[in-house]
Each structure stands twice: as C-alpha cells, then as structure tokens.
Length: 384
Image (cartoon, rainbow, N blue to C red; front, side, top):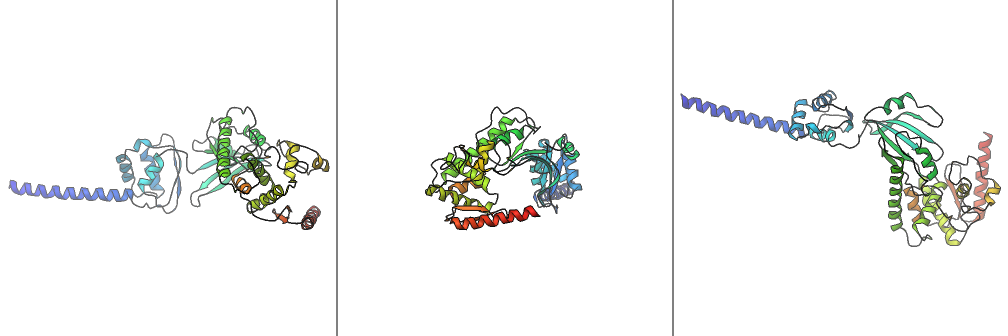
C-alpha cells in the first residue's frame, strides 16, 4: 500500500512540476510577448503611486492582459520599488517587460503636456501643447504673448502639474539681446544674466528646462551648443570659400539667416555673397544696415531711410568693404553649412519675388527688372 501511495505522490509531484513549469513558461510569454495595445497611449504615473495601481490602470486601458503577471514580472526584475512619476508614452503592442522598463528607468516625461517659451525674431509667445499618442504629434491647447496678454487658465492649470515639461525654443535669426530680454519673462528660471553674450554665439534650438534652472546656465548651454556647431561646420568647409576664420563664417551665416526664411534658398543666397566677396564687391545687404541702427536691440519696425543706407556704421555693407566686424544675429545650423558650402552660381544680385522667396540675377539689367516686378507687387498689395 505504501508503495502505491508513494507512486501516486511521485506522479502527483511530476504533474505539479510540469504544470508549474508550464505556468512559468506561459507567464514569461505573457510578460515578454507582444502586448494587446492597439494604439499608443500616454500613461500618467502620479507621485506616490504603486505598481499595483499602475498595472490596474494599464489593464483598464487595454495595454496589458494580466495585472498580476505585470506585477510578478516587475517584482522578479526587482523593479517594483523603482517606479517613477511622470507621463510616459507607451507604444502600441508594447510588452509588459517594455512597459515596466518605461515606467522605472527615470528621466524626463516622454508625453503629456509641455509649456514652450518661444523666442522669435519679432515676438515671443508661450505655448501650451499636449502630445497626441495616436499621431505622436503635439496639439496646441493655448498660446499667448506674455508681454501683451494675460496668461490663460489652461496655462495656469498645467503650470502647477507635476508632470508638465518645459522648453525654451530659440528661433533662427534672433539677436543675443533679444534672448536675454525674453528669458527675463520665463518665470520658471531664476537668476540674472550679467552681460549679453557675443552676437551669433547662441545656438537656435529647443532646450528642456526645469524649475530653478538659472538663466545663466541656460545661456551657457546655448553657447556651448553653438561652439560645437561652429567647430564641426568649419572643419567641413570647402577649400575655395573666401572665408578666413570661423568668426567670418559665423558672420556670413548670420547675414544668410536674416536674408531668407526659405530653407531651399540658403545656399543660393550664400552663393551671391560668396561671388561678391570673390569679386571684391560690396555685399549691400539691408539686414546689416538695420543692425547698425538697432545694434540688435529690438525690431526696427519700419523701412530703412535713404540716410540710413548712406550712414557709415561698422555694419553698413553699402559703405564698408567685405564682411561687417560681427555677426548680426544668431544663425542656425543650416545657415552655417550654407556659408561654407554655397551653391555654385553666377548670381550677384537678388530681390524679393513676392512669394516669400527671391529672384536671382547675374546682370544689373536683370536685377533691375526683378526689382521693378517686386515694386509692382508691393504697389498692388498696398492698394488691396
């Protein structure tokens, strides 16, 4: 009888081990296999939340098939106590293993709401936007000019949320003075900037910031980024360009930046200035004259006067030969590249063509005809 009992016990143990092994394999497959999420979601994890609460939330949103397997897997990987607060983008069909990694690895939130402080050439704006997980695109929720408008309720609401992210976005072509002035109104930042950085030495880009970052630290990040770009682009320059130093490249790039907002034109515009420098012609570009009037402190807001075109300043390229002594704005990476790799064209003239771009010309007669067409367009617009 005891032999029979022992035999049954062994059989039972074998079956139990087999079932346990099968359960483990099934659990591993569930944990590591493709998840059921049909469309990406933004998962918000509040401060003080638990893995149990997160697993229930994921199950309700159809991101995981089993909250218990999710929790067991997180515990097995020793990540249960590593849960981070924030808003995290969970891609479609993400496995439980991938989701556990997403919510425990730390770093900035990858979705949710952003407040972007935009510093533009003519105005500054504050934009509240939210990532749509289904398209991976941001949707604007509110926008206002802090100098002219009161902050909307949406801004005030998300400004106090723990998972809101913040950015300062610097447009190509802004001046260093504009950047310093506009950073004063970014209330997330602290501290003062002791002096305006050298013109051209701030890299236009988007910079993530956090509460109590200092303005001086952010300025230094912008300067470091621009210095890296300058070194990288100068190292890739063509041998035949009429530029003797990285400083001259930066100055020419700033002029290109101010002359065209059309990306496809940058190298053509660069070719005009390169041809003029090679031929010993004056650059004769209005943005340099404007800089001589404003010194980069604000927008001129009107057309240039004849007296200003004739006035001798270090930046008036209708009067001086060659490049001005400093950049006239902060150029972006594309304009830096255009300065050292211009198109090969015979052009030495260009003028606005009414579409936002320019009409290029080789001879003065062609240029005068282009100017006449532009003036006609201006007159027609003025009458409408």
